[in-house]
Image 1 (cartoon, rainbow, N blue to C red):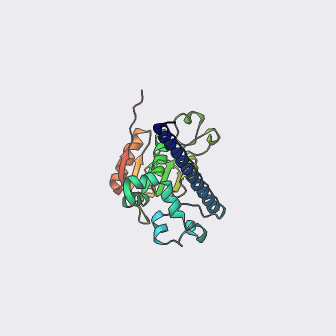
Image 2 (tube, rainbow, N blue to C red):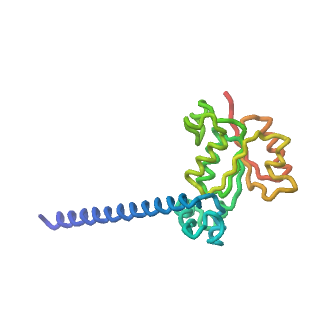
Image 3 (cartoon, rainbow, N blue to C red):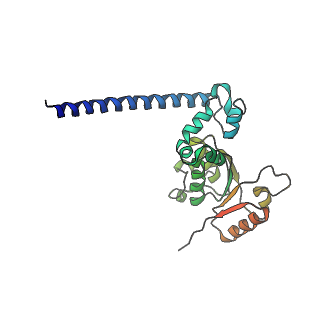
Length: 229
């Protein structure tokens, strides 16, 4: 065997060993995460919680019990790409945000799921409708077994499965003139207005009504638009 072959053989052996070590470390990390998640679920402490509260007071809230003091670490691992892109300050601002999605069909379901995957801390879902079989080719969270269930409950359940740090509120109701102040938090008993209201309604008059209500109550509104052929 010449010297070049020996060098190549050594490089390949080193690469194989390095890969084996990397795979072993990754598998160990995954098993550790699975164990910690299981412990949190068994202790009924894996529930939505304001992430910044977790960092400011490790003993406050249901998710920050003594046995689950590493919840912030799990949260950061869950959103590691987001933290890398936005930085701690930017991602924590996202975690502090409260977004309302009105209309939870083909557009709204994908919007809500994307918001939760982005690390938004609180999402309120508003829709009166139920999942039908014809919903399944466009809905972002529904499966066959969800047919007949409220769309907002379907999305709420789905989000909790992949991001239990996101507080999801499901409101089974139709947005209307009568409940706009209650929903958009324009009344005197309001504790917190949504930072953003996402309009995913498929009815033009109701869309206009929502935009007018947001303007009156001073909510930041973003509308989706579709064309019917």
